[in-house]
Image 1: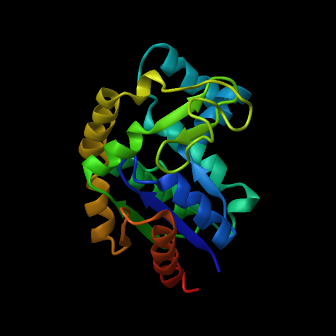
Image 2 (image 1 turned 135 degrees about the horizontal axis):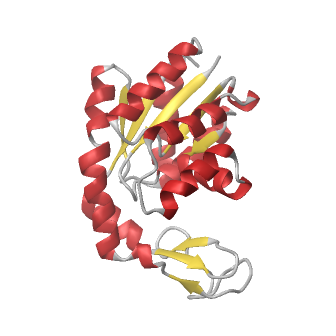
Length: 220
């Protein structure tokens, strides 16, 4: 039986971590919008070149390009039995486009899991991220600290905080989320698909609640 899930939550809610764990448990792929963009840009696909043309001009990539990337990914064989979408949709128009895409394929979402955290908790989590200059590995002072402060466990490279990891940058991201993405919560609640998960618990407890809710929605 298939299981098609969207994960919602503000930056710092832990969507990526929870999506990885849930994907392993359910045996379906974790489809992250950021990974899709990187893949298309690196491979220089038609959609990637189109996205690059907007990025290079400093413009937002239009929905039709993003939706094209998602549609292509969901058409791959590994998504036939389900998927976990993380980072898409970000807006109500994108959600409507996803509904049409799935309807054309004769399937539908099983559940939309909203990982709920307070803004101050999200900011505290976001502030702890450190990235390796050499291999790009990501650490967190609270949840995944390096064995030696400032040094990557994997390659020994220097850890640094990216320019987009400042508190000001995080507050901007949360403001954009509230303006653009939080309306999705009401959209999916009206559709009867929304399940809310307390994201301020431990990683293990969030995953347990998430898995339980999703298994009920997917009839497992």
